[in-house]
Image (tube, rainbow over all chains, first blue to last red; front, side, top):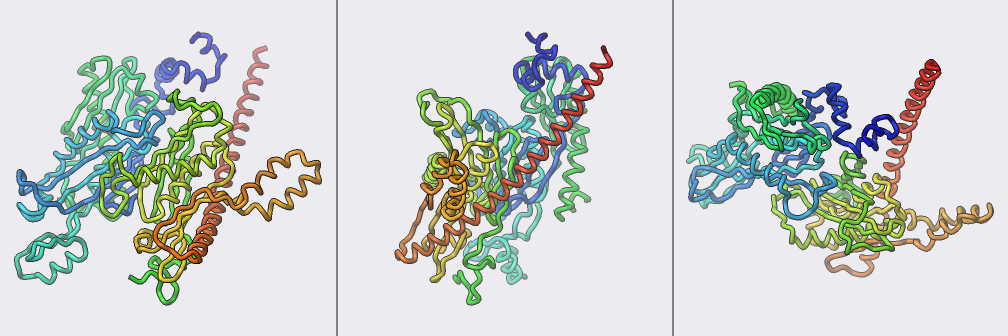
Amino acid sequence: MAAAAAAGQVDADTFRRLYPDDYLRKFVEQGLRPDGRPLAAARPTSIGLGAVSTTDASALVKVGSTTALAGVKCEVVPALPEAPDAGRLVVQVEMAPLCSATTRPGRPSEGAQVLTEQLSALLGSVVDARQLCIDAGKVAWAVYVDIYVLDADGSLHDACLLAALAALSSLRLRAVSIDESGRVQTGAAAAAAQQQQQGERPAGQQERRLALSCQPVSLTCGLYRGRLLADPTAEEEPLLEAQATATLDESGAVLGFAAGGTAAVGQIVVVQCLEAAKMRGKEVRAMLQQALEQAGLAADADAS
Amino acid sequence: MEYVSPEGLRLDGRRPKELRQLKAELGVLASADGSAMFEMGNTKVLAAVFGPKPIENRSQEDEKRCLVKCEYAMASFSTGERRRRGKGDRRATEITKAIRNCLEQTILVELMPRSQIDVYVQVLQADGGTRCACINAAFMALAAAAVPMRDILASCAAGYLESTALLDLNYVEDSGGGPDVAVAIHPICAAAFKPVAPLLSNLQDSGGGPDVAVAIHPNYQDRVVLLQQDNRVAIETFEEVMQLAVAGCRAVGEFMRQQLLEHTQKLAAARAAGEQQAAAAQEDDDALDEDDY
C-alpha cells in the first residue's frame, strides 16, 4: 500500500497523514526536513521583549511556530524563617489549552509539569536567591516567572527557557523603601522616600537589575534512523527514536542534559548533541543581546 | 477621583463616546484551525478554535446540532496584582458561560450535527472589558476557522460615571463603582432593517428565489445576544447607556468586518498566486511528458 501511494497515486498531503514515518524518511534520506531546513538547523527564532505591559518584564519567543510567552511579576513578601536572607523565584509553565489540538483544559498536563520542574531547577541555579533579599529576616522579593505555551510545535523546552531567560534579563527590580513603622513602598514612591531619608539608616534598595550567573540556552535534538535532527517539530517528535535536550551556558559548561525515548542514546550522539547545542547557544545569545540593546536594556553588568 | 474632566475628557484622554484603539490579527497560531488576537486598548486577548470535528464524548452527541465547548482563562500576569486563579474560579466560570452562550447563538449549530467545536480564549493583558474583548476574539477566531455563522458577533461595554455615559470602560473606570452594561449584538441583523428592505424588494423583482435567506434578517432585527448589567441604575439612564453600548457594538462590528474582508482578500490573493504556480508547474510537466513520447 505504501508502495502504491509512493507511486504517485495519492497526493502529498494525504501521504503525509497516512504514512507520517515514510513521509519523514523520504525527506531525511535526502538530507532535508519537511519544512525545508537541513537536518542540523534550528527554525527561525525571534525574541520580542515587553510584550505584556501589566508585567514587570515579559518576552514573547517564537521558534518556528512554537510560541512561548513569559511574564515576570515581582511581589514583596515576608521572608521565610528557614531562609531569612533569601527571596524566592517561582517558575511555572502552563500549556494553554489553545496551544495544540490535543491539549485539554483542566489539570496541568504531564508535559507542563515536567517542564516546570526542569526549568525551576535550572533557573534556581542561575538566579542567586540571596540577591532577592530586601531586609534580612523581614521582607524579600518573590519573583514569579509564568511561562505560557501559546503554540506547541515541538522543542518546547528550548522556547520556554529562552522566553524565561529573555524576560529575566530585561527585569529591573523596583526601588524599595521601608519606613520606621515597617511599611514597605515600591517604585517611584520608594525612590522619593529614599531621597528624604538620606543620611539615615539606608532601609531598602534602589532600582536594580537582576544578576544572572550565566545565560543558559538549550537545544533539543532527536534521533531518527541514525541521523540527528535539531529542533524537531511536533510532527517529527512522535516519530523520533530518542530525544535529548542539552542546556549549556556561555562558557560551554553543561547545565543540564535530558535524554529519553524508546532507543538508548549512544555516547557519540550525546557529544554531537552537546556540540550542536553549543553552536545554537552562540546564535541565540547574540539574538538576545540584540533584542536587549534594541529595548535599551543591554546588560551593562555583562561587560564587567 | 475625577473620571471626566471639565473639558469632557476621560482619564486616558478619550471623549465619553469614544472606543479605545482596536486591533485584530487573524491566523496567529499555526496549530489551531482558526485563531485571532484581539486588542481593545490595553486589553489583549488570544482565541483559538479547533473544529468542527467528531465529538469526543459520545454521551454528549446531539444529532440535531453541534456541541460548542468553550474555555476562558486569564494569564496570571495579566492583571495589576499577580494572582493564581484556580479551576474553581467562579468569575471564570461565569464568563465562560457568557461567551459560550453568545457563540451558540451565532454559530449555525444545526448545520453540523454530531460534531464539536472547541473555543479557547486566553486573556494575556487585562485592562477592563475583558468579557467583550473575549467575545470579539472568539468570533474572529471562528471566522478564521470558516465556521458557518448567522452574523457578525460584536460586543462592547458602556458605563455611567459622573452623570455621563461612557463607552468601552477601562479598568480604572470599571472599578469606579458606576453601572456597567456589557452588550453583544449581531450588528448586521440589528442594522439590517433599513439596508435590507430595498435589497428585499430587488430580489422579489428578480423572481424571488433566495428571498428566504434575506427574509430571515428582519426576524433578527435588533437581536441582542448578550446583555449584562451590574450596579443600581435609573431606568432612563439604563436605556441611554445601553443605546451607547449598542452603538459601540456596531462600530466594533464594522471594524471586524473590515478586518475579515482584508484577511479574506489576502487569502484569495495567496490562493490565486498558488494556483498560477501550480498551473505553470503543470504546463512544465505536460511539456516534459510530450518530450517523452
